[in-house]
Length: 463
Image 1 (cartoon, rainbow, N blue to C red):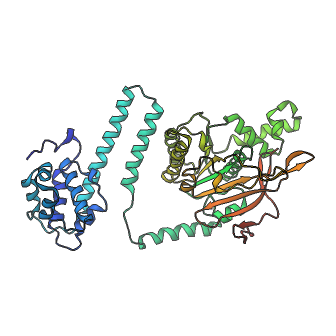
Image 2 (image 1 turned 90 degrees about the horizontal axis):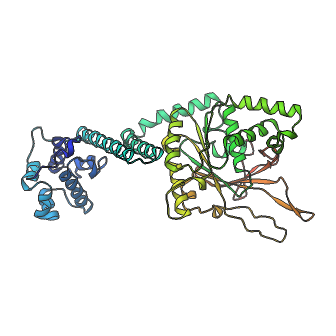
Image 3 (image 1 turned 90 degrees about the vertical axis):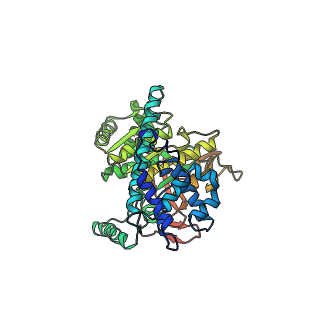
């Protein structure tokens, strides 16, 4: 019997505890095998510290999936002598089958907890040792920190994850949350967007949800995200911005233009401002200075860096994260589609693990012209550029569209724009009549902008 691997480099492991779990499973005469089900519902083979135990648990899973009882003879038939030798030998296994002191064990949860704790401790050791090794190899600190943070967060999430529990334990929590919103008079559970009918239909921007806002170049995606940012900052909801395309000064000047109603072109060219306009812009910037807003304008930001920095922002109390924009995130992949898929998955994970809504902007493919007058057709979900998993990962997808018309041989915007909700995981798809004021970078609802669902029915008219 070779047990040289019992303490693999001194890593945390409890051989006796792991053996006790296997002994309880072998000796459990209940049908189904309750001890095995307790172990299988929480443990994976990799959670065991000994290689022989990892093999044994894997074989148990295979036997169970084959619909056979987990017994010594069945195990022997399944793996043979060589398999037994790989798990420590015949004697090692038969010792587990012999009734142990204190049998019968009907609940092995305390033993499972010990195995899980040891497994998490080993994962922490491996993760930190890998980070130290990469640091010695002079790898990029941001990448090392991002991967280490990701690894540690996954360990934390599993350690804190609630097991399957009766509904009675959750009802009080749900009632408490509803009562808080009811007595506070809040119309929506999520954060506001500034578009009343949109908030009404979505319930606001909800925690743990990825909201994708897509549009063609020049349709006002960044402006919409800034409008949402302004709405929340004015309500003292902290916001974090990741801007891969525009720098911080440009974003601040756009915010100042929308706050003051001064033409954005003049704000960008201050020599054209009069004294009153100049004063108002300075006052607006001083007001923005007080906002709970953090901006990261790192160019070429990687998904690991954004994930790590986003988690830190969430830990500081940020309630909304904005990413501008998805296709600019640096992500692994052999082509743009794979890169966008990885970026989409990362933003979804950040929303979920950070317990915050994440508003991610995305480009659309170039829309084809549908007639001789050059009006662009309204976008659909098929127009998501290199969409891949964007539609699958997102909880909400909003498509921005600006109507154009031919005026004396030139195309101009009519102001009859639309916000098309192509996906709404918690409700219907619908369309809202809006208008985009490009001069001041502001999106507004039209007075006749009743939200209309895709089946033609009016909705959210009271918002």
